[in-house]
Image (cartoon, rainbow, N blue to C red):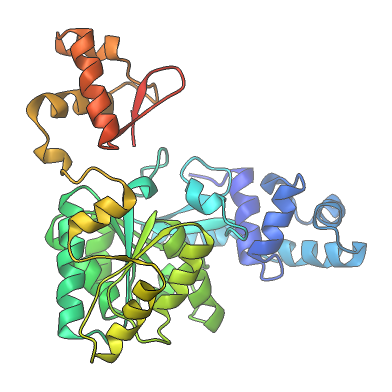
Length: 370
């Protein structure tokens, strides 16, 4: 499998430190196209960068030279060798929630679900981020695992870091429910293989994803944590803080979530425990208190019934929507023919499923899975 011009250009941008995510956004917003950068040795690339970035000609030419010095093909083949893939800007597997950031990464490196290159690989519409302290208490670890397990059994994707403490506990809870989680790294995928819980990483990648916006061999740097926290917040409509000291890095994810308009929730803890002070402050500032899985669903306006526990007819109709061919929206008439039931009856069930936020109505009147 060879690199497309679009992927090659976006990958060059990700490998060149001078073209930061914020400059990437400016480049795209001013008419820049990733495939232009694939031809970085071409003098025209510098001219286009100068125009799109609004910089001096010498600076545009300097950025073009840095792009030309990268080796996207080598990075691509190294990525494939470890069983991973790349989701590039402009590709169908690049998550829409990340595309909308003010400073989006040009590409994401992804371990897991490698052959899936269409649709929402990241399942960001029904995901919850669990964040908290690395030095979590037994209470925090227990709650993180329990929340993750309960949410996963209800069809939710868990997003968390791979840091020890609340992050790894959240993934363990999701795996205990045979569910999907997304681990977001502050270093490259190759670098992560030599550090952290290797077995846990493999287990996550079997059912879900291990994701990074940094090149394969990139180490951990201070600003990487800010980038990672923003990506965690972007990949989920809601963020739950389980435990955090008042100066915990987990609160950086909360700041990113608030900037993105995400719902922030917090788990109350013992008032004499330092790791409960972060959630307490968030609750005082208006975060939604979480004492059970149902609280998360209520805060996000989701149906609290797991998909596999719906009434039989609702489950049949939901299955019919899910197997609608291609990306076509399923209509009540088509489902009626499929199930051999009255169209009015199907329309009523679709209304219930829409109220449960399990399907969404398209402008043409058909329905798609949320």
